[in-house]
Image (cartoon, rainbow, N blue to C red; front, side, top):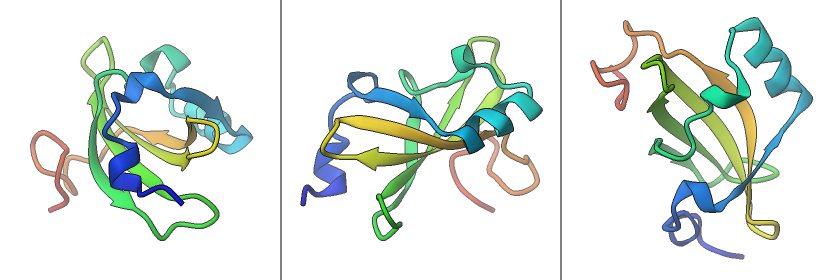
Length: 103
């Protein structure tokens, strides 16, 4: 098995993106469009190597309109793809000013 840290040294934009039904529903309810997904310029702020069935990442970024956004994505090593689990606007009461660390 590939190490998650080594795997994600590639730019996030190198990976294919898959959406699950759950993530699509959540994005719709939260008024997050596929164009808002910030994988190209997002920053990995947490890694969950023990998640099952695939390890996952928390990505912090901003939409093109400047809206803060967090993405939780599973990493599929064999397909070189990131699977969007959920996307949400981080709560400023729970995160630092730039939304990169929990308070």
